Image 1 (cartoon, rainbow, N blue to C red):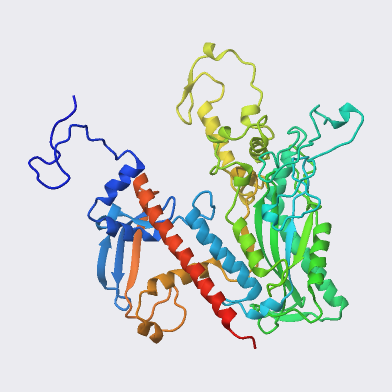
Image 2: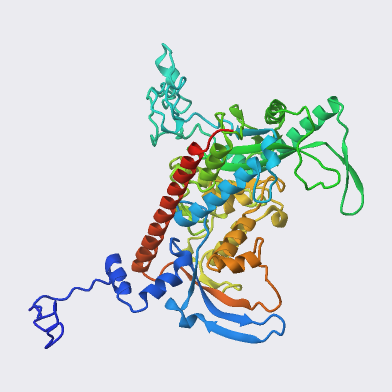
Length: 598
């Protein structure tokens, strides 16, 4: 029977009265949880409290005390515990760079990456503006082929925008033969594809025959691709040094920190690169290579290269290095001769212009690389965290699809080299049936079993071997394959740069923190204290210090309603920020159009 109780008995306020229906409980839904939070008296204080991490998908919760200390005497001025704050915690953004994990933090990382990469081309943020005149090349290094895959082939582009290409594609893998069996591979599967794949087709990147494709070689190439890039950079610098000697440019004598004198080449390479996973799950690199000179008085200074060095010299050096560098990996129980690590045949080298007149400009390149810096394995369809012995079975399959076979290859090749065959694949000894063997107790763990070997200890030993992280501890150069199986073998950073190329992410973060801490100060006070303030800087000995004794309390929002409210508020703030940027750009464009030409 429905309830007939009054909501508020004997109430005469407007909108309240008797209700014959059962009051639904809305706290189970996101909207209901958000409505409950919005009804709290401290709702606006909660919004202000979580503003720093409002757009984060899974913020980090910290608990503890915030102590205000006088620096000169060490006297405690004030202490505040997180128990007195909303939700009894401090929210901090996760800072994840992957757009598929946290779009808000990835957007911040992408903007920082854009500023970092562009500063290395046009200057600013501590980099001299003279770098705009340095020769610079946008290079793309690809992986070699490991088997035939579906691809979209366009021989002649007629579209205006390659990103939205709608040109008619050629047949994927066409073959003309009179023999019907000529289009079959060694496994009696079709080696021909007459389809004209469109952009975004899920088939692109998948092998025509999974058994013909060399998954082992690809994951090993992904693992050692970082070393291949390092050797390529060194080879390009050697080529440039040899070119300088041919032109009669002497070496530069540089005094080291220990007082010794070194003779170095008068030119050096300052690159910044981003790794990208293709649809076939092979890594290729987009790099900005800038040519610098060497100042003997200040080796860390960024100076122009010697006269006579051009963009063509830089491109030729990179092309020579990419075609010459190749090496073989150490021996493996599955392949005694190792695997060959080389670059693919496709190599793109485009000069970068900083005047905005060319096809490849500084803004275009910086935006292109910053976009790929926030991506990971999403293009392959695989998304997972680091895999362990308990979760590897959910993703690895030697007879599965392309991604499952790559993960299986990582786990199989990454086993300890002292164990040629994994424990699970070792032949069992021919002993009596366990049901007729007397139970015995394992002296190590106390497990009662009838098997010849304790299954608990064997599993623990296998798990400990699987967790061996680095070559320095085990002597196994392939041990990192298991650690990076969720990344399909690639374990390097997705954005790296030379130390002299540009500023660091830490400097950008410190500048942003200092700006947020001082943005509400009076203009007079800001004028009295000019200069860039960092989070670690203090004005004088009388400025109170805030010391946090915080510990990890959890990850994520308490409820889906909290996440809905915080993310909505952050989305509205981003929309207002984007609108302000558009209006500012419009005003600047209007002012520049009204300014008379000199």
